[in-house]
Image (tube, rainbow over all chains, first blue to last red; front, side, top):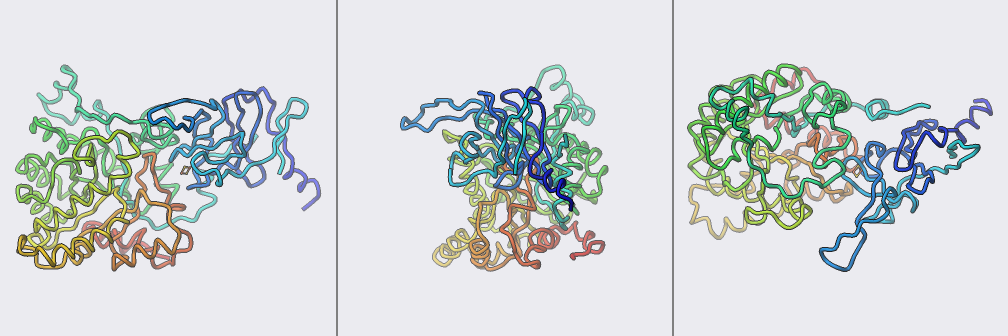
Length: 127
Length: 372
Ligand code: FES
């Protein structure tokens, strides 16, 4: 394997930042890894392995949405974190993209994440 | 930019399985049924806007309602309504040897309250639609005979009409507010046995919580096994399996982890209360082991040790059969749902051999398939 090939697997330009609007996701293959890149409502980018930690569903087929906030009042619904919650397309587990991909119901479990930066208006992913 | 697709991902990463999937939900839309419905029933739908009344107050459990979000047909039609998409996403991707179709909740002829004639007509149309569009279009797919079981004589006529179709493998009964072990329904079991059909039971609406809906979906979904326990208890103590010695029952979509408890409870009760049901001549757990198989989905997450303990408490690993429940939201992946590193022999039983042993009409599959 030559040096450049190795370098390519560690840093890749995914797209122009305008290719992905807040609330959208895209699928990307990073080396051997399927990745889902998410853009939160505040414009920041996050990237995770595109396989749910439960049964491996492709997370990119789920939804970037909000979540009902924990409450002490039975019957109270308060919706929060709009656009920051990645919800799996199968069993609907909720992962907080801004909190390291932690699962809302059991935060000790989280998605595998990748570092993302914006360089010269491009979304760049690192491993 | 490379874009991955679910199917490509699954195909490249995962080894194909020998799999008989014992719960796949194909979906009909009323307009598809019209061509198979006789008059005047067709016009009740086209002219009079008949719809089967349904009540579920919470159809929002997951991202796309009760379906896997990625199972919605790409052109927007509902999940489960397109054979070629099902082939691509499920049968080809997982390498199914066989899949057993169990229908969707609507229309569900046996769940209709009243108007048995319409229910009977719907069952007939459904069976013809299923045979023509699914069973005869993909050799891997097998079917369920839909009946209007509230009218046992009409139900028997429908079993006589389509039960000998080579790809019909069971008669489907919904689990809702009817206890099917009652002798009133025994003609259905007699007809099923005569045609080498299993009875498949699948919950419908609303089987738990005293026949009503609990306040939240999470309660309803948690308690589905209780509805399955009702039916198993009812079938055994009403003597169905003493009367129909060749009859087999597939309990679909209630999981199996409740079974050890139920076996112990029924055996203990039988020792004390046998005098009330003298037509029951064996320990209930023995009857269950011989006559009833349980599909896996929805599987609770268990490690291997716990999983094996549950099987051990059932006294056999011959009566559990893998199911995906495709395309519903609580689908179980055959590659991911079971604990890892189960021994190969057990995997073969769960994925393949147990279903093969239970369904008389799947016997033909045995010859052509290597288990390696
Ligand atoms: S596979 Fe994601 S929640 Fe089950």
